[in-house]
Image (cartoon, rainbow, N blue to C red; front, side, top):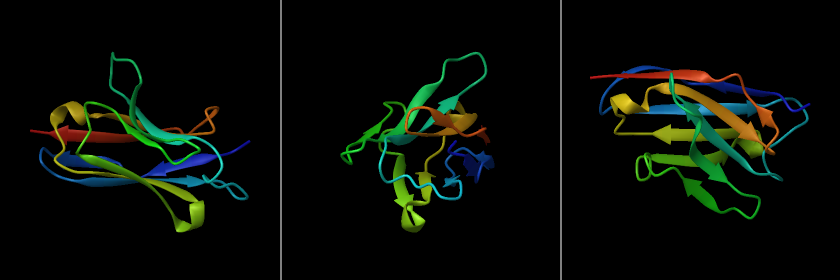
Length: 113
């Protein structure tokens, strides 16, 4: 069972920046499977923020394109998401995903006007 632990969420004003990080559990890394970030706002469905496929192809959600960058860090042990020019509509719980089946518990991002 691959454990994922998100960190870096918090409250920020519109226009600000945040960096989220997802750490893989001991003995696991992000190198050999699809991985990404998703988010879910209250009353809405979970949506893609950013995903890196096994072949390295990166896909960003339309609502965040140009404002976020996803990357693998620390020897493949973390999946990072840098977000800038945040908007109030970016407020959501952000989840890390690995190998399709594994999900973190989420980290809250709140953007105020």
